[in-house]
Length: 205
Image (cartoon, rainbow, N blue to C red):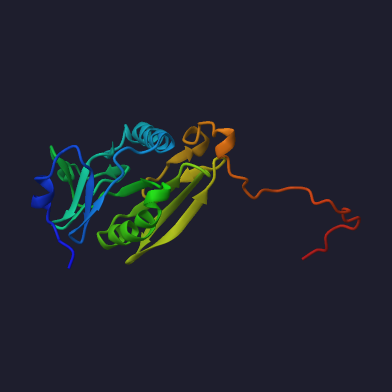
């Protein structure tokens, strides 16, 4: 049976390593996120910080421990806390209002399955899954014991957040980096088929 660990075990491990605990199981995090991941995380943190300056909430970026329980400890890429009693000198105690995970190929199933279930179980009101490229941001809102989709957004869109009323985040300011030619994905988009166009108007519904 795999070993199970607690918050006290976790706090005794070397500081240069990044781990998360889910149900006591230890998951090794990537020691060095990629450049696109970091650019998106920092941009989201900056946009949220600017929005929250006149509001009683604070934004943090990884690495920062969030202790959900004695056996559940995570380090979200970006998080928002609106209860100052949760903020300690070493970590965040309890569920943030908002959690953002910047998704990479190595974290895809971890973020979309294990952490999604964990955040729902502990009452994180809103969960963003952000993919640096192809550019995509998904806003999930807690509805009972699971999440429902509030919205899916591309680079040209403006993201809104039920947890942060009034936020209008233009994603072109987040996805503001050029993709090298050799790494671009040939995404599906509107085009013109090589056929004759209709001469008659579309029928009325």
